[in-house]
Image (tube, rainbow, N blue to C red; front, side, top):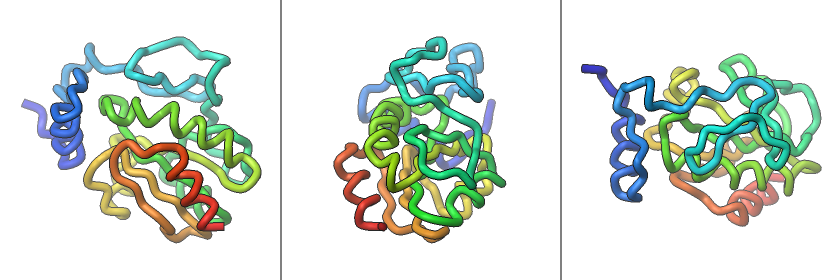
Length: 171
């Protein structure tokens, strides 16, 4: 039997409460494909080919100015990305139903704040050290960073208006 992380157990419980069919069962054949560079993040749990109707997902480019795109971060890219300015980071996992509900909201926020902040996402299964450092116990968790320090944290699916307000407050 596969041992599940604390985050997996909490998201499993959240999936049951919200009625989401996705669970961290360990059955890889039932899991969506991981997001790769140049591929759009599937929303509402539906795997899809790259699409032009969502914000593109790009590899980490931390030294760049805000672009309106959601950047996928690895560990090194995370620390570089949050070091300067205002950055919203979505801590998520591919198997998490609520995370897939959050994905199009994060993309919307990226477009709305493209002139004032960067928006990124970090898969907690791919980069567990960062999730542990910031005590991520449930996902989705979204943290607004200002010059490398957490400014505001949200746990659970969070509406665009709340995220945008937190980003503006961090300016």
